[in-house]
Image (cartoon, rainbow, N blue to C red; front, side):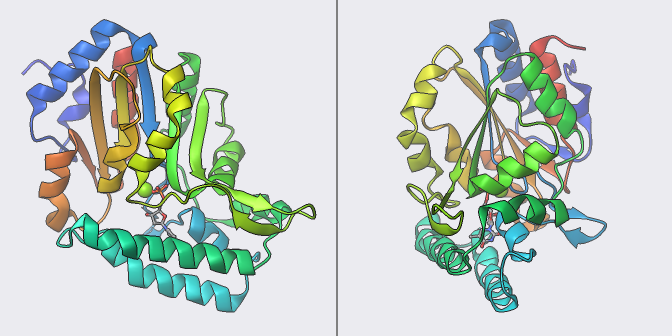
Length: 292
Ligand code: TMP
Ligand code: MG
């Protein structure tokens, strides 16, 4: 088959229907990059899953590993992770069964963080000290979208203040980036007192998307969507997009490859396996912006 994007031919790229992927790309390319918007999850999608054999932290894990919380709280958050993360990624359980458990996880974690009286000015240091890593190729990803004025929505069930700090410290928090996430609410003395707005967890991104109609209304002239996620819950992030024409879904399959291969290939158009870099999304963006 004629290869528009050679990067798609790599062994670590799985596609159930390559022809369909190429058709979507052709159609998007014809429409031009001024009709494109990118919607991406953050934790373990824009950031790495592991590095040198060690797991990399999510937004919550960054706080967990920092001096902003007590040893006891750290242990409890870790216990919660070990209880609930296996449930998050268990494909044998239906979403309806997992949903209340995910709400339980996020609620317990956020209550615990609030009890820790975390200070706003401790966040930057927590991020600096952490092992959080954006995936290889992140400079090109963020800079290229910015250069072509393509809006990037980062839609995260992590913590907005933390993820903003990660991309700010990496010098890629450009004005084309908008974040929907759980934001911390600080009191006058800069101490965490609650989380703002509706809770976003891994399985309610559809509701989160529908609450942000203003954002998607503004992007009405961009009916072509590149969506990136690492969880099956991320597939709902584009549900607020108005008059959608094409969507290309790229999924990062980080963990439990064998068990999850089929469900990822059934749901994502392109599946990147084994803690991939951003090479494939970057190649897609290059193709769609006509940059060779
Ligand atoms: P994401 O939507 O940006 O991927 O963020 C959600 C991730 O955060 C999800 O993979 C689970 C993870 N998480 C933790 O690591 N620790 C926690 O305490 C909670 C509530 C979530
Ligand atoms: Mg994620």
